[in-house]
Length: 138
Image (tube, rainbow, N blue to C red; front, side, top):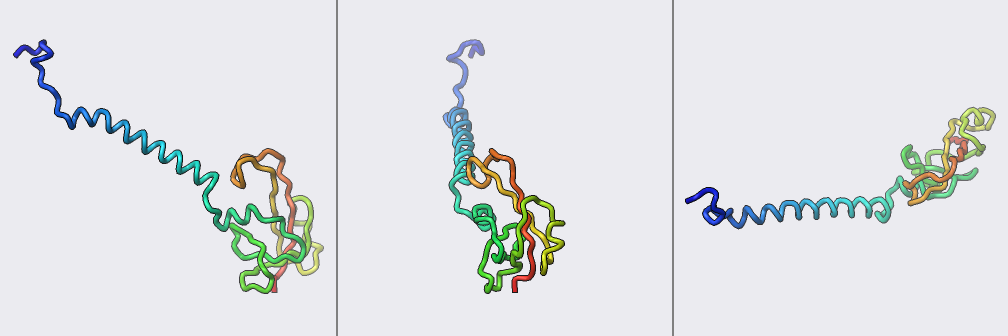
C-alpha cells in the first residue's frame, strides 16, 4: 500500500466521523438552550417574594411591613408577620429625619426608579429615596 495514495488510506470508522459533526451540534444546542432559559428567567419567570417586594407600592403611614429584611412586604397589621408599622415618611434617604418622630424605633430607606425590562431591568431615571420611620407593629 502506498501511503500517498488516497484510496489506500484506511477510512475512519463511522462513529468517529459522526462525532466530528454531532459534538459541535450538541454543544450548540446546549448553548442555545441555556441562553433561552436565561432569557425566560429574566423576563417571564414567576415572581418570588423578593420580586413581589420590588413591585409593591410605596408603603404609606399606617402600613405594616413583614420582618424579612431582603423583601419587606406590606402586610396586614393584625398578622403575626407584621414586624413594624410606618409612622412617618420623608423624602430623601437620611435616617436622621426620624429622630423627632414619636414612637419611631428605626428607619428604612426605599429607593424608587423607572426601569426598562421589569424590576431587575436597567434604570432609566435618577433614583428617588424615601425614608420610612417605623415602630413596633403591635
